[in-house]
Length: 242
Length: 273
Image: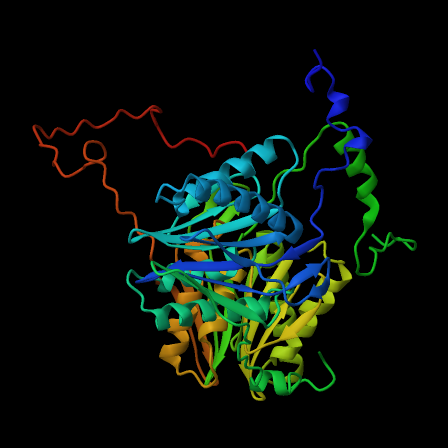
């Protein structure tokens, strides 16, 4: 009976190079929050290949079934794989034709199981996922990391957003934000990310999910400000320095 | 004591003599003592009349909080202050040294110190130690050329900025600055924004905590607001122990003079040395 415990060489043999060891084409942060009517999620459209901004029209947010919206940061190919799995899941669910459909809680649980099991096999799907949705008036927003850490919260952020967007959201999020206020808050976070994250692009989409369904906006750019007087003449008072 | 061929200490820079010995010790399993880092949030911004510097007050030693209320805003000159992040000993020593150098320079020139002078002293020192002096500084001050704000990195590079943050909580504080800073802030708005940024670091970064220190420097004046805000007070009072409210009753007062151990008979001769 051969098990990987009896033969540890199986775990790290060179033929086993099918697993994800490093991410190659990556997406940067996703930020999402709950508002009055549902969930708002924002992600930019960049796919970086190492330190090159290779792809600038990657849609990192996709609707899942009738009630959910999935946003992903990290390896794009693993995200596409996940979409395939979820497609199959939704298809099987529709085949039941029983009037019920998988809601965001169920999809979140499914994703957690998938991510955790892959992590246990040392072959992770290199993503941080954000899952939001509304079913029967109940809003749901959760997150799954590549090692299977999952939780539910009123506002989430992945990647760099953890450090830059989370403080802003913790300060300024409140219950019952209107659509405009929610978008404004998300744009504030995305603007800071644009200034301070090297892999961010100024082309983002904002997605909204409510009881009625999912709407993903057209890509647009944020307005930035670079006109500080200290930037105009940084060496004023110290000619020749830097 | 004059020797002709005295051992002259190496002029400046880092002496790598002990590295071989350290490597040999490390191989034998001897661990370096964990140095105390400040694990910090420090910020600075320029407002309409000058510069405001802010810092948290937690000093960490690995996962432990070594000092709950340390001072991270260091004095360099009457019109120049410097916040320090990184290894606490390094920031203290470097700012102390440059403060003395600026003092000597002031005697020499007879003029108020300029911020770029402090900048150059710090930059020179840190570069010559090739990043081994782990001090990341936010230097701010007002001299006759106006208000200045600089960041200095451990390897010796500097930036001139309208608002700056350093330390482990720098991202949390920068998020606040990037979303709320504008030019021409008043003193109250500036203090408010700096406090918000430091609080963001205190509550969102594990390496920063406790209280907020603020230093406002203007053309003719400086104000060091130590513990300007204390958002982490001790609120828990134990229900049973440590309650000293019950006064102890005095039952009896009796004074017993203690006997002297040595009996002085007579003033004899003076003691022997």
